[in-house]
Image (cartoon, rainbow, N blue to C red; front, side, top):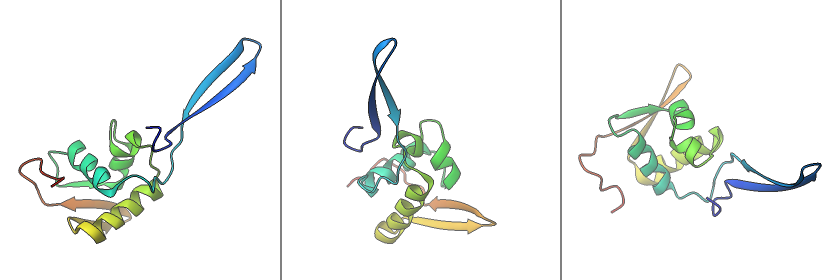
Length: 111
């Protein structure tokens, strides 16, 4: 996670002595490879053929929380994946953004 700069440490000196704190920083994550992000979506939502942007962002152990990627970063990554890989269909219905894909029978995403 240090390669993605997800965790930041901070050292404070106070009454209790030296204290080191860690904080998770959410960001757009330009350095996160699109293929890895797509794989994490497909792996997290294995029984689905669609998922909302909100689910990607907030699902427990989902891509948004695992990579600490913010809403804009998720949206930009999905647009980029849609343009380059042509595997997703991004639907915006009544203000709810949803991502749809064809069902893949086996885990062979990274060929």
